[in-house]
Length: 257
Image (cartoon, rainbow, N blue to C red; front, side, top):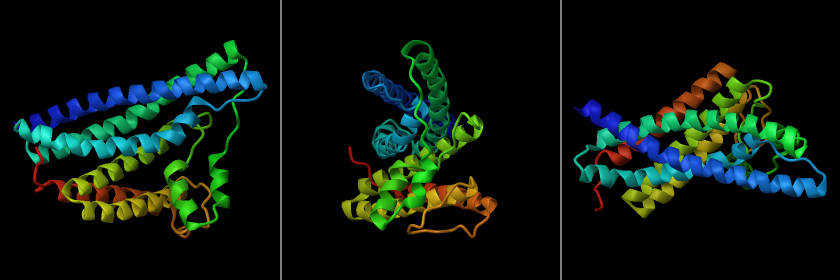
């Protein structure tokens, strides 16, 4: 029965979040259309849809992760245990982190077809990984870790591009969930876990860049002495740490009805 409850929670939360994701991707598509119209007037280029979503998806998943905490009282009120909620929410986050990049790539292919055959616009060539080489300072490095993540061009290696984006947004989701769960307990815990979340995302950024053999900045955390394999294991350990912390925060928390 508990196994069934976990799957039921996972299914419910996945489809709720999937609806939010369709809304997010739809808004991004409209924004790209507006940008395309402006590009036509200025006779310039426009970003690919994949690149536009790449910049915004981490923040979207971070917010979804925060909101996920507030499913807990609903499920407990309906007789679902905290562990079933935790397992279901975790499974739904994995599914969403895989589906969002896959849908984004499909829409990006359609978007390129529209640009090539109807709007007659060229796609702007952007190398996000070059930006990171010039990162100057602490605050800028933290902000960049939230906005510009390790990037693989889908036209050169689409499976790796999907995997890299999925790993990025999954960790953003976990950090959002972690901070949401901390604030659900109390304000002080929430502020402490904001700092922990920033550290997790910043370390993730460096580890994933080494794992994907991408340029590293001269920022606050430099781990270029690690091998790609060790760095990939480090990303996995960060995920395990975040999941364990979320479980500790939610397993005995008082439910606010």
